[in-house]
Length: 183
Image (cartoon, rainbow, N blue to C red; front, side, top):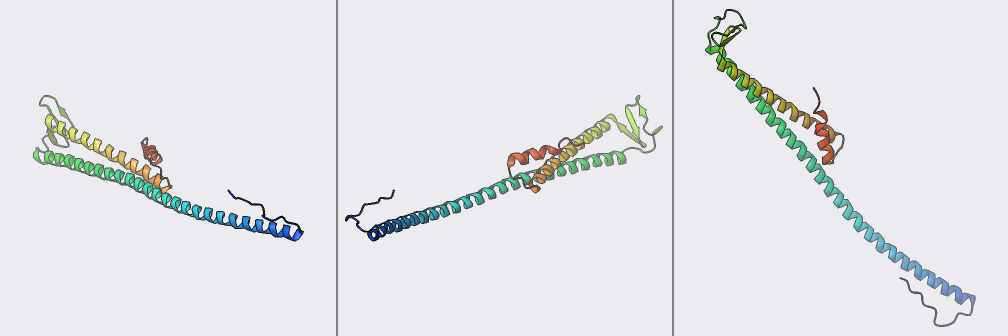
């Protein structure tokens, strides 16, 4: 609040009046200038704090987004390794059966012999236990392959959103599911 005090002596001439008005105006301009200087310094400090806060927040958002993508990539990598392991198990089972059975003893390729309880495939005679093992390995491989496809699509969605510039985790999570319904 500015205080304006009346002069102590009465003004009698126009010169005295204009000197008095000029003195008041100069004083007011000095006060306004000082007030604006203080406000400018205050706004500069607030602006610096805001820029620092936004920079910190942006860095945190990027860390969160990259952390989300890194987690998805780790899941894709794990799913891929599990799929490869399941393929190895299935191939190993098939190789063991191929080399441990008699070849060429089948009456016809792919025929089912119900009386003996065996199936003949490509000249390989398989028992019911062997078929169950192959079926189990195949189902296991199929589950691991679907798991790998699922996590790959999740990572693809997140990467697509990040590439488009999205930094909100809720939007990235939503983008992860955009490829879920692909055939």
